[in-house]
Structures are given as structure tokens and as C-alpha cells.
Image (cartoon, rainbow, N blue to C red; front, side):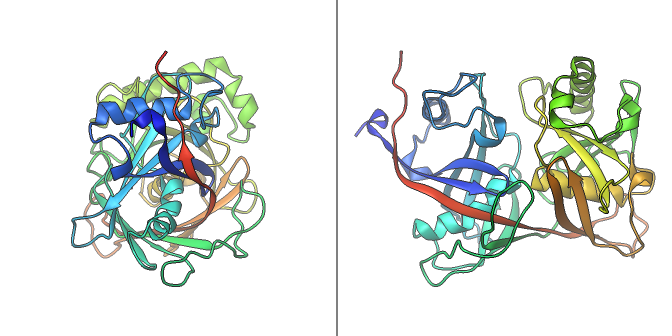
Length: 357
């Protein structure tokens, strides 16, 4: 059977994202062939992705590729691929903590593991996360009473725990070697606790940090400044030319407006996130714990705090970050990070790709 004859696929909502989940064995082994097939499956490049299953937005044009892991500390391997919407691109330059929430349930559905918790090797960064969620042997219970901002209704909680920053995308908590840098005239902190993020006080760019997503996306001047900052930061972070990639993200921060720890507005990298990515939120929270970090003085943090309420355009996301306070080394080591998400299977079947034109 050729690839154009259909591919086994499960569509899942993971956190505040939605993506197509595949077994690695069901896709071409050659990365170029795989990426070409995925673009045709998702309907890219096309702003509406009308001839594919993509949702015409970066948050719904995502793919998870899963296989059994050969690592002794992991059960499955998870490769995340960001498929461009109106561009013919497929990027493996970042993790996705939202789709990560669906990896454990998918692994059980496909018979790769028998039950939770599931140890997941995130291929993009080399790090390992553990996912715990309800269900019996060989079955997943998606029902539950956990609500997360940006998703209607409730579902079963998926508790994700990250051990440390080893294997982060850039290989360092502070990729530039500094707690803060002045980049393109803007004071920023470049941090990578699972997701490369450039944290900037919104006021540095002449904005409040409370603007709506629509207002920010309509602000051409701001978009140009954010992109210039992102390109310059990417070089400093050792990521090279990031003009064609989705990292680093830019997160504007402001004093919390709704009882949280910090208020955020995140560019992913050009569109503005309706909420905030899981690992992006973890990286922002980590930056707030570093003395002298950009925007740290805006946060509502008490000594010894490990749980952080990250405000975003559609609500709140709670994450946990614990750093080693017993050492004077800079930056301090991250002991652990964690977050609660939900996931739900939307359909399971065969997807048919657009044929070559």
C-alpha cells in the first residue's frame, strides 16, 4: 500500500493544542519523505489548510510521532513536528508540552505500553518526562473533572513531570550565558527550561502586556520589533538563523492582573498564542526565579514558592518549578518542573493525504 492510500492516524487534543498522532512505523522512514507526506496530510502550504486536517493555525497544525524507546529510562520516544500553515515547512526545533499530554494515552491506545505512568523521551531535546493519568491496563479513561483555561468542559488530568533541564533545546538554562542581555535595545532574558523563550517586560516595547490577541496581531510595528528581537536573540542563543523556525518564542510580561504570578502575551513566533505553551510557561516561571532577570520584578513571588500561576489571554496556567537554593552557582540547577494538562481522543482512523499536483 502506498502512502497516498491512507495512513493510520489519531487526532487528539493535547492541552490547548490539537494535533495528529502517528506511530513512527506508519510513516516513511526518510525524514524528507515523511515531512512531505505530513504537509499533504495537514493541507500545507495553504492559509486555510482546506485540503487537509490542519486547523489553519499553528496551534492546530502539529504532529506527534511515537515509537517504543530503546532508552532504559523511557518507555516511548516522542518526536514533535510543527507543520507550517501557509509555508511549506516542517520543524523539529522545539518540543510541545501540550501535545505531550496526549502521548501517554496514545501509547496505551496503540499497545506500546500497558498502563500509566508513561516515561516519555522527548526526542527534540533529549529530555524525559513522566505522564500520569487514569485508566486500567490497556485502556485510557478520558473522563474527569479537571478544567484548563482555553478548553471548554472538563477531562481527566494528565500530570506531567520534568526532572531537570538536561537536554533542553539549546543545552543550557541560560543559552547566552547571562541572566539578562540588551538585545536590539531591549532588556531581555533568554531562558530554556524545555522551551527557548525570550522574556521581555511589555513596557520595554511600549505596550501594557494586557492587550488582546487581536490587538497584538494587528500591531504591525510591534510585530516587526518582536521579529527583529527574535532573530537577534536566536543568534545569541546559539540557534543560528531562526527566520524559518518557530523558536525562540517571545513572551511579553507584565504585573499580574487577575491574582496570578505574572501576566503574559506570547508570540509563537509571529502569531500570538491564545494562551501560552506548557514548556513556554515553565521557562517563563524559571526566569522569574533568577535574580536580575527581565521582568522578574513584576512578578508576585514569595520566598520558597514552587507553584506559579501564569496569566495569559484566555485564563491561567499553573506550573511548578523548583530550583536548587543551596548553592551559589549561577544559574542555579533546576530540580524539577511540572504541570497539569488534559487530553482527549477526537478520532481514530485513516487519513488520506492530498496527492501530488
